[in-house]
Image (cartoon, rainbow, N blue to C red):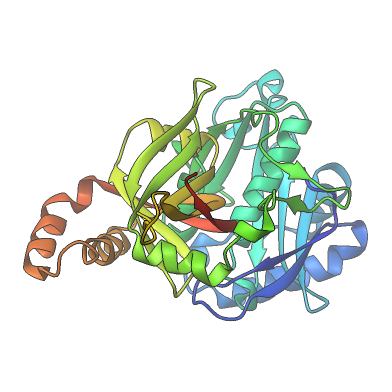
Amino acid sequence: MRKLPYTTTLTRKDGSEPRDFTIRACTTDDLSALLAMQEAVAETIADKHTFAVTSSAEISESLFLDRCFCAILDGEMVAATAMIINRPSPRNAGSHIGYTEEEQKTCVTMEVTFILPAARGYGLQQIFFDMREEVALELGATQALTTISPDNEFSLNNALAKGYTVVAERALYGGLPRCILRKELRPAAPGTAAVSKEGTMEFRKVRKKSNEISREDCIALLKSEPRGVLAVMGLEGYPYGVPVDHWYNEADGKIYIHGGLIGHRVDAVKANPNVSYTVMDHGYIPEGGWARIMRSVICFGRVEIIKDLDRVADICRDLSLQFTPDKEYIEGEINKSVRGTLCMAITIDHMSGKQIEES
């Protein structure tokens, strides 16, 4: 896990200017700020049944016993999350699906997350999920549970994209309907990421600087070449690379791919959303020469599974227009296949490219 606190630069889904967020652990001194933020978030929610207020006593308990984290933007707390550690408790969601006290010691509960409107759309919920799961593994937990309103489509899709599955529905928090979701936790394969002494992520740089191409050239390659190889951590311990089509969206800086609802790559990214994606052009041979000159780009990032059918259709539409201008044909295929199509969005954490001569 990254050493806390750390600062990360995030870009909003609407493509607005990147912002620097500081992620840190909460302390007991944060109680008043957490309560104020919870109240502010609650006021923005139209359907109050989707939001259960956490009491001051419960937040105080978690600050002492559990794990709480927050995000700071421009010196102000704008998001926070809590995880009930693997301890027997009425707040352990396992207690609502028949877990014994011993079984509750094997699972954590991803509890409340508050995000103010100014901080929404930056992927903080995904960051909080990843952080809490890393802590859960350090605590020896083998599974994670969470509760979400069936009417909270955004949070439900985020949890499903992170590999959680619905295992029960219960009336909780004073009779509110809630889905209980579960995820089996597996340690990441060793050596999947490098961490600096300061705790921030480091990616290897292009070794020969003379071969490196600019970020602008990398993006141009992603736009002009609609095919690449998606590499995931295979469940059998072997890396799994599969050729796919993609669409690079300049508006949000993400790579979108599509495929079937089930399969090796789907199972793999549910277990570990970290992937790499490689694109290479066809290159050219200079006049009078024999060695082909080629450009390639590799992106490291995190996959989000998209299940909203309208959004899936939009992505498939943009992806298909790279191959044919026949809109009538595209709409026909979307109407036939959209319900059996799964789209993935890759949020790029690092991108580099190079130009080489085959000699």
